[in-house]
Image 1 (cartoon, rainbow, N blue to C red):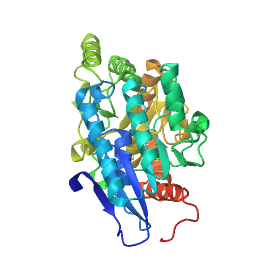
Image 2: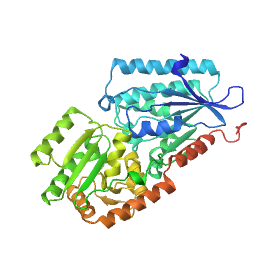
Image 3: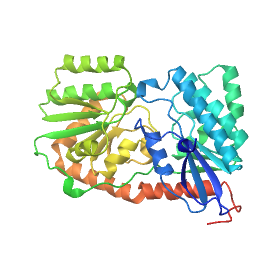
Image 4: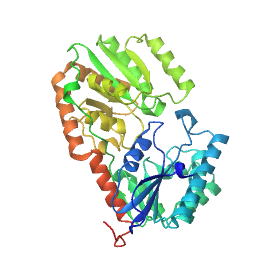
Length: 388
């Protein structure tokens, strides 16, 4: 059982707080699991930090399915939690991120885990990585919704990523609310930046290949660029959400006769992924629904000119004409127009990319995220801390 629990740091002989993090870390490589890994892997001197890893879905298409293996994984998590409680005798606070996608599976899983966390720990901290949390709950039956709302209510702390989420969690009656923007490590090396030919454009997309990310919109925009005789290759990095959607997009590419312009790379990570960022002239992310995309932060960090949508959450950290070009969601004509402008105007690409990099350095580094997360969780204890 000791192998199941990862004690991150701390000396139990010192009077420190015991902090439990119940969270998924990669794989799969999604925004929430990536941000969780940055939190898990960093030590705080005032507490003993423990991690119980959640791994209900190993692949993207498993998230909404109810399976025996998921049930067994849930039981395993609960056993680890009970064992840790017996071992430590006292858990001062538990950190948990309620699921984003609205599914019955996620509602059941979250409700069971939260019940156990409330019974076995002193204080509960929620971290909301997804937008429209309350609306996601509303799709469920009234009885399920009533139970869930009762279970979720009154956490010691709710952490949100952007101010726009505040109104979505008011009903929780959280004792405290903190805003902590996402932040990622700086791995950019200007010497690795590949200089492409001025008449040839590399476009990169990175994220789950799913309808709500605007993949179909991107393919339609690519068709327009090809018709304008723009020389480009558009690399799509990410796994498919389903075989059905994969066939739909591949048929669209075939029908538009743009196979030479579109390269589907699948899910790749590390240096295999970064080499495409280094060669990119434009990062295009035509999402229809997002909170604070890790992919967009990566593009800012890697000093790439960005084209994305003007949804409310993007507008919280991106400014049209400054660190990106914004288009209306679901508008392939606008998207193609902005991509055409950047493909023709190298100087505009450079200005936008440099501004994006500066904004990342000033606001969205992983050190800033970790510092702000630590400050937020410390607020749960107010003046209780005896060791800092």
